[in-house]
Image 1 (tube, helix red, strand yellow):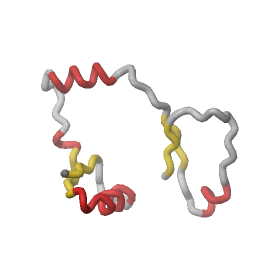
Image 2: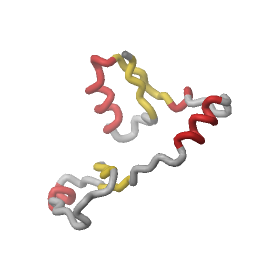
Image 3: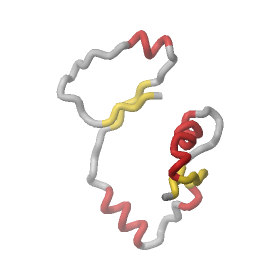
Image 4: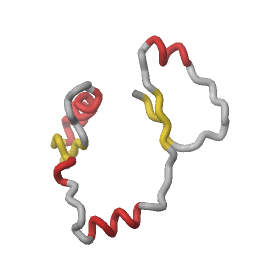
Amino acid sequence: MAILIGIFEDPFPKVPVNLFIQKEITLAGSQGYNWDFQDALTILEQNDLSLGPLITHRLPLEKVQDAFSVLTQRGNQAIKILIEM
């Protein structure tokens, strides 16, 4: 899966569509925003939400490539991978 983040200057960029078909790549878009970060930080500060259960894997920094492999494997149930420094 490929995810495009942000907004492009050119509203009609050239994309190699055959590559997406040949490699069976799914393309999704995600618009960047920042208006709800403060609300999220407030909720976390008030301890109204536990994020610990979302961390499904913990790996040391030297295994960051393995983290990407885990994320891209189908059916592995990875939600969030924490890279420990």
